[in-house]
Image 1 (cartoon, rainbow, N blue to C red):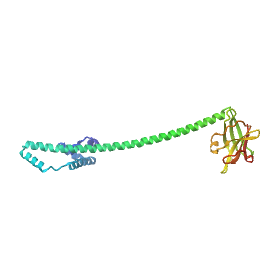
Image 2 (image 1 turned 90 degrees about the vertical axis):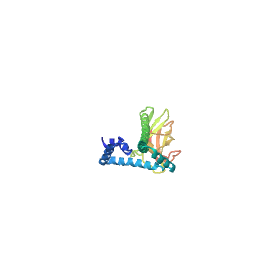
Image 3 (image 1 turned 180 degrees about the vertical axis):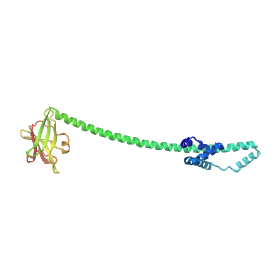
Image 4 (image 1 turned 60 degrees about the vertical axis):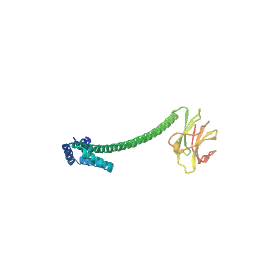
Length: 262
Protein backbone atom coordinates (compact mmCIF):
# COMPACT_ATOMS: atom_id res chain seq x y z
CA UNK A 1 0.00 0.00 0.00
CA UNK A 2 1.45 3.38 -0.96
CA UNK A 3 1.51 6.42 1.31
CA UNK A 4 -1.58 8.03 -0.24
CA UNK A 5 -3.66 4.86 0.12
CA UNK A 6 -2.37 4.38 3.67
CA UNK A 7 -3.49 7.87 4.70
CA UNK A 8 -6.88 7.55 2.99
CA UNK A 9 -7.51 4.17 4.69
CA UNK A 10 -8.55 5.95 7.90
CA UNK A 11 -6.03 4.18 10.13
CA UNK A 12 -4.47 7.50 11.20
CA UNK A 13 -7.83 8.74 12.48
CA UNK A 14 -8.29 5.47 14.38
CA UNK A 15 -4.86 5.99 15.93
CA UNK A 16 -5.84 9.50 17.04
CA UNK A 17 -9.06 8.01 18.50
CA UNK A 18 -6.96 5.37 20.32
CA UNK A 19 -9.16 2.75 18.73
CA UNK A 20 -6.27 0.52 17.60
CA UNK A 21 -4.51 -2.29 19.36
CA UNK A 22 -1.07 -1.67 20.81
CA UNK A 23 0.57 -3.51 17.91
CA UNK A 24 -1.40 -1.53 15.32
CA UNK A 25 -0.52 1.75 17.03
CA UNK A 26 3.16 0.80 16.94
CA UNK A 27 2.87 0.05 13.21
CA UNK A 28 1.36 3.52 12.62
CA UNK A 29 4.19 5.14 14.58
CA UNK A 30 6.73 3.17 12.54
CA UNK A 31 5.12 4.31 9.27
CA UNK A 32 5.18 7.91 10.52
CA UNK A 33 8.93 7.66 11.11
CA UNK A 34 9.46 6.31 7.59
CA UNK A 35 7.18 8.77 5.76
CA UNK A 36 7.05 12.51 6.47
CA UNK A 37 3.61 12.85 4.84
CA UNK A 38 2.14 10.27 7.24
CA UNK A 39 3.84 11.93 10.21
CA UNK A 40 2.34 15.31 9.34
CA UNK A 41 -1.14 13.85 8.86
CA UNK A 42 -0.86 11.94 12.15
CA UNK A 43 0.21 15.01 14.11
CA UNK A 44 -2.53 17.11 12.51
CA UNK A 45 -5.24 14.60 13.44
CA UNK A 46 -4.04 14.30 17.04
CA UNK A 47 -3.80 18.09 17.44
CA UNK A 48 -7.30 18.58 16.03
CA UNK A 49 -8.77 16.14 18.52
CA UNK A 50 -6.91 17.67 21.44
CA UNK A 51 -8.07 21.15 20.48
CA UNK A 52 -11.64 20.00 20.24
CA UNK A 53 -11.52 18.38 23.67
CA UNK A 54 -10.01 21.51 25.21
CA UNK A 55 -12.63 23.76 23.58
CA UNK A 56 -15.54 21.63 24.75
CA UNK A 57 -14.33 20.58 28.18
CA UNK A 58 -16.39 21.79 31.17
CA UNK A 59 -15.67 21.89 34.92
CA UNK A 60 -18.35 19.93 36.87
CA UNK A 61 -20.17 21.68 39.73
CA UNK A 62 -19.27 20.93 43.36
CA UNK A 63 -22.58 19.11 43.86
CA UNK A 64 -21.95 16.94 40.82
CA UNK A 65 -18.42 16.20 42.04
CA UNK A 66 -19.79 15.03 45.40
CA UNK A 67 -22.33 12.74 43.76
CA UNK A 68 -19.67 11.26 41.47
CA UNK A 69 -17.28 10.59 44.40
CA UNK A 70 -20.10 9.00 46.42
CA UNK A 71 -21.04 6.78 43.48
CA UNK A 72 -17.43 5.78 42.89
CA UNK A 73 -16.92 4.89 46.57
CA UNK A 74 -19.97 2.58 46.53
CA UNK A 75 -19.34 0.93 43.14
CA UNK A 76 -17.39 -2.28 42.62
CA UNK A 77 -14.37 -2.88 40.41
CA UNK A 78 -16.50 -3.94 37.43
CA UNK A 79 -18.29 -0.64 37.45
CA UNK A 80 -14.96 1.18 37.59
CA UNK A 81 -13.82 -0.72 34.53
CA UNK A 82 -17.04 0.13 32.69
CA UNK A 83 -16.67 3.82 33.55
CA UNK A 84 -13.05 3.81 32.46
CA UNK A 85 -14.05 2.23 29.19
CA UNK A 86 -17.01 4.53 28.52
CA UNK A 87 -15.44 7.86 29.37
CA UNK A 88 -12.75 7.80 26.64
CA UNK A 89 -15.28 6.52 24.10
CA UNK A 90 -17.39 9.68 24.23
CA UNK A 91 -14.28 11.84 24.11
CA UNK A 92 -13.00 9.96 21.08
CA UNK A 93 -16.40 10.13 19.45
CA UNK A 94 -16.40 13.92 19.83
CA UNK A 95 -12.88 14.05 18.46
CA UNK A 96 -13.95 11.94 15.51
CA UNK A 97 -16.74 14.40 14.81
CA UNK A 98 -14.36 17.35 14.70
CA UNK A 99 -12.02 15.44 12.37
CA UNK A 100 -15.00 14.70 10.13
CA UNK A 101 -15.91 18.39 10.15
CA UNK A 102 -12.35 19.35 9.20
CA UNK A 103 -12.28 16.83 6.37
CA UNK A 104 -15.67 18.05 5.14
CA UNK A 105 -14.42 21.65 5.20
CA UNK A 106 -11.36 20.69 3.14
CA UNK A 107 -13.58 18.84 0.67
CA UNK A 108 -15.94 21.81 0.36
CA UNK A 109 -13.02 24.22 -0.10
CA UNK A 110 -11.58 22.00 -2.85
CA UNK A 111 -14.98 21.75 -4.57
CA UNK A 112 -15.39 25.54 -4.33
CA UNK A 113 -12.00 26.05 -5.96
CA UNK A 114 -12.92 23.70 -8.80
CA UNK A 115 -16.28 25.46 -9.20
CA UNK A 116 -14.59 28.87 -9.49
CA UNK A 117 -12.18 27.45 -12.05
CA UNK A 118 -15.10 26.03 -14.03
CA UNK A 119 -16.91 29.39 -13.90
CA UNK A 120 -13.80 31.14 -15.28
CA UNK A 121 -13.52 28.56 -18.07
CA UNK A 122 -17.22 28.93 -18.93
CA UNK A 123 -16.89 32.73 -19.01
CA UNK A 124 -13.86 32.43 -21.28
CA UNK A 125 -15.69 30.02 -23.61
CA UNK A 126 -18.74 32.32 -23.72
CA UNK A 127 -16.50 35.31 -24.54
CA UNK A 128 -14.73 33.37 -27.31
CA UNK A 129 -18.09 32.22 -28.67
CA UNK A 130 -19.43 35.79 -28.77
CA UNK A 131 -16.24 37.01 -30.46
CA UNK A 132 -16.49 34.23 -33.03
CA UNK A 133 -20.14 35.08 -33.67
CA UNK A 134 -19.22 38.73 -34.27
CA UNK A 135 -16.48 37.67 -36.69
CA UNK A 136 -18.92 35.42 -38.52
CA UNK A 137 -21.45 38.26 -38.80
CA UNK A 138 -18.74 40.54 -40.19
CA UNK A 139 -17.65 37.90 -42.72
CA UNK A 140 -21.25 37.27 -43.77
CA UNK A 141 -21.80 40.99 -44.27
CA UNK A 142 -18.66 41.28 -46.39
CA UNK A 143 -19.64 38.20 -48.39
CA UNK A 144 -23.11 39.64 -49.08
CA UNK A 145 -21.57 42.91 -50.31
CA UNK A 146 -19.17 41.05 -52.60
CA UNK A 147 -22.06 38.99 -53.97
CA UNK A 148 -24.10 42.14 -54.60
CA UNK A 149 -21.19 43.83 -56.38
CA UNK A 150 -20.61 40.77 -58.52
CA UNK A 151 -24.28 40.61 -59.52
CA UNK A 152 -24.27 44.30 -60.46
CA UNK A 153 -21.08 44.00 -62.48
CA UNK A 154 -22.37 40.93 -64.38
CA UNK A 155 -25.98 42.05 -64.81
CA UNK A 156 -27.09 43.12 -68.30
CA UNK A 157 -29.56 45.50 -66.64
CA UNK A 158 -26.70 47.72 -65.47
CA UNK A 159 -24.75 49.82 -67.93
CA UNK A 160 -21.09 50.09 -67.04
CA UNK A 161 -19.80 53.59 -67.81
CA UNK A 162 -16.05 54.10 -67.45
CA UNK A 163 -15.09 57.63 -66.40
CA UNK A 164 -11.54 58.69 -67.33
CA UNK A 165 -9.39 61.67 -66.49
CA UNK A 166 -9.98 64.85 -68.51
CA UNK A 167 -6.24 65.18 -68.92
CA UNK A 168 -5.12 62.31 -71.14
CA UNK A 169 -1.96 61.96 -69.08
CA UNK A 170 -4.08 61.49 -65.95
CA UNK A 171 -4.72 57.85 -65.04
CA UNK A 172 -7.81 58.51 -62.89
CA UNK A 173 -10.62 56.01 -63.50
CA UNK A 174 -14.09 55.46 -62.00
CA UNK A 175 -16.67 52.79 -62.89
CA UNK A 176 -20.33 53.87 -62.83
CA UNK A 177 -23.06 51.19 -62.92
CA UNK A 178 -26.45 52.61 -63.88
CA UNK A 179 -29.73 50.69 -64.15
CA UNK A 180 -31.94 52.44 -66.73
CA UNK A 181 -35.04 50.60 -65.46
CA UNK A 182 -34.76 50.94 -61.67
CA UNK A 183 -32.54 54.07 -61.93
CA UNK A 184 -30.26 52.66 -59.22
CA UNK A 185 -26.69 53.91 -59.55
CA UNK A 186 -23.44 52.62 -58.06
CA UNK A 187 -19.84 53.66 -58.55
CA UNK A 188 -16.42 52.24 -57.81
CA UNK A 189 -13.22 54.28 -57.74
CA UNK A 190 -10.30 52.55 -59.42
CA UNK A 191 -8.01 55.51 -58.89
CA UNK A 192 -8.53 59.15 -57.94
CA UNK A 193 -6.20 61.77 -56.53
CA UNK A 194 -6.42 62.39 -52.78
CA UNK A 195 -8.09 65.72 -52.02
CA UNK A 196 -7.07 68.38 -49.49
CA UNK A 197 -9.16 68.88 -46.37
CA UNK A 198 -12.41 70.71 -47.09
CA UNK A 199 -12.80 69.35 -50.64
CA UNK A 200 -14.95 66.48 -51.93
CA UNK A 201 -15.70 64.72 -55.23
CA UNK A 202 -19.26 65.03 -56.57
CA UNK A 203 -20.93 62.93 -59.26
CA UNK A 204 -23.14 64.52 -61.93
CA UNK A 205 -25.44 63.09 -64.58
CA UNK A 206 -25.71 65.24 -67.72
CA UNK A 207 -28.79 65.22 -69.99
CA UNK A 208 -28.67 67.55 -72.98
CA UNK A 209 -25.85 69.39 -71.27
CA UNK A 210 -27.81 70.00 -68.09
CA UNK A 211 -26.15 68.60 -64.92
CA UNK A 212 -28.13 66.73 -62.23
CA UNK A 213 -26.62 66.03 -58.81
CA UNK A 214 -26.03 62.28 -58.44
CA UNK A 215 -24.35 62.33 -55.01
CA UNK A 216 -21.10 62.88 -53.15
CA UNK A 217 -18.29 60.34 -53.18
CA UNK A 218 -17.24 58.65 -49.96
CA UNK A 219 -13.69 57.75 -50.95
CA UNK A 220 -13.26 55.26 -48.10
CA UNK A 221 -16.27 53.29 -49.36
CA UNK A 222 -16.02 53.92 -53.11
CA UNK A 223 -12.38 52.85 -53.27
CA UNK A 224 -13.00 49.49 -51.59
CA UNK A 225 -16.48 48.48 -52.79
CA UNK A 226 -19.46 49.70 -54.81
CA UNK A 227 -20.90 52.90 -53.34
CA UNK A 228 -24.60 53.44 -53.88
CA UNK A 229 -25.35 57.04 -54.88
CA UNK A 230 -28.56 58.85 -55.81
CA UNK A 231 -30.96 57.32 -58.31
CA UNK A 232 -30.44 58.76 -61.80
CA UNK A 233 -33.56 59.04 -63.99
CA UNK A 234 -31.77 59.86 -67.25
CA UNK A 235 -28.15 60.25 -68.26
CA UNK A 236 -26.13 60.74 -71.42
CA UNK A 237 -22.88 61.48 -69.62
CA UNK A 238 -21.49 61.06 -66.13
CA UNK A 239 -18.89 63.43 -64.74
CA UNK A 240 -17.12 64.11 -61.45
CA UNK A 241 -16.01 67.53 -60.23
CA UNK A 242 -14.16 68.76 -57.16
CA UNK A 243 -16.43 70.76 -54.84
CA UNK A 244 -16.31 72.13 -51.34
CA UNK A 245 -17.04 69.55 -48.65
CA UNK A 246 -20.78 68.94 -48.50
CA UNK A 247 -21.29 69.39 -52.26
CA UNK A 248 -22.72 72.03 -54.53
CA UNK A 249 -26.04 72.66 -56.26
CA UNK A 250 -24.27 73.18 -59.58
CA UNK A 251 -20.95 71.78 -60.81
CA UNK A 252 -17.72 73.75 -60.94
CA UNK A 253 -16.71 72.78 -64.45
CA UNK A 254 -13.25 74.29 -63.99
CA UNK A 255 -12.57 71.41 -61.59
CA UNK A 256 -13.95 68.72 -63.89
CA UNK A 257 -11.88 65.64 -63.07
CA UNK A 258 -13.26 62.58 -64.88
CA UNK A 259 -16.01 62.10 -67.51
CA UNK A 260 -17.60 59.23 -69.44
CA UNK A 261 -20.44 58.84 -71.98
CA UNK A 262 -23.24 56.33 -71.51
